[in-house]
Length: 196
Image: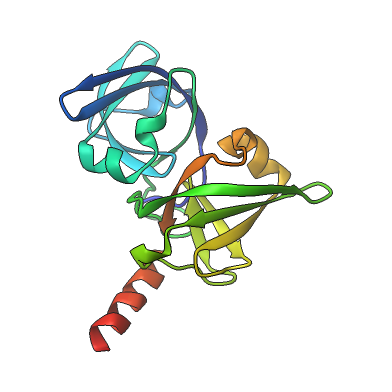
């Protein structure tokens, strides 16, 4: 379980394919706090630490993860949003995030707003995910509030702190991002579908 509050920006140092799996090695300032078997969200994707060596650690993404997220698009030197799993009893500064990406989206516009930015994303609405105004959404692992919710798109407003401390500063039009829709909303939607 995560909160969507990014702890560090990791740097991809190596990518190795083994059959259908991708082993990603990253460098991060939180390396000294990691251990084998620990869950870490990478751009919102929960992956397990499988090796630690010197100042890097390795995680493995399986075919299912590669098919449903943007993890397979990463290259050496790419910057990744990182968050370790939350501890019970900690403050929930963001919202409840599982680290299970629902689908990807495309950034269709970035609009400067006199000290902040509005990012708009489009996604495939046929997968039955949805946003609501002022609801929560996780974009590349970052807990955000939805503005301008539509059937297949939404916008988020990014403050300078978030812009500087996440990989939002590197996004461009046509960048692909990972989305995790609000888990409470997903349960409500599923209950509604089962009753109708």
